[in-house]
Amino acid sequence: MNLVAQIAMAAAETEHHGNVALETLIFGVIAAIVFGALGLVTFSYKNVANRHSAKAEAWAAQHGKDGHEAGHGH
Image 1 (cartoon, rainbow, N blue to C red):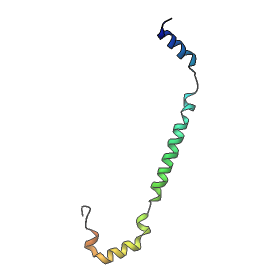
Image 2 (image 1 turned 90 degrees about the vertical axis):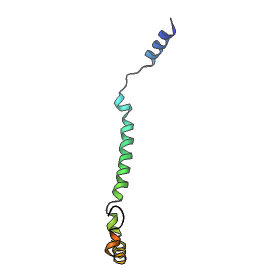
Image 3 (image 1 turned 180 degrees about the vertical axis):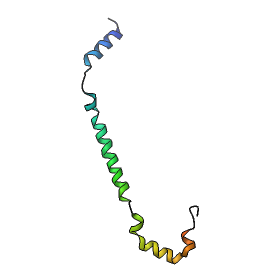
Image 4 (image 1 turned 135 degrees about the vertical axis):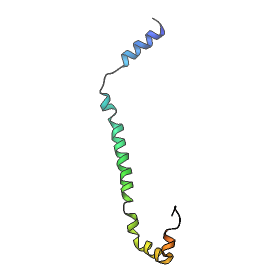
C-alpha cells in the first residue's frame, strides 16, 4: 500500500457525518450578540444634540447667526 492510499484510508476512518449546521451555529450566535451590542451603542447616541440644547442655544446667542454657519462647507 502506498502513502497516498494510507492517507486516504486514515481520512475515511476519521471522517464523521454530523450536522454541520449545528456545529457552526455558535458563529451565528456570536455574530448576533456582536451586532446587538453595536446596535445598542449606536442607539445610545440617539438625540444627543437635544440633550445639550441649553449649551447650543447659549453658544448661538454668544456667537450670533454668522458663527453657526461657519465651517463644514457652509
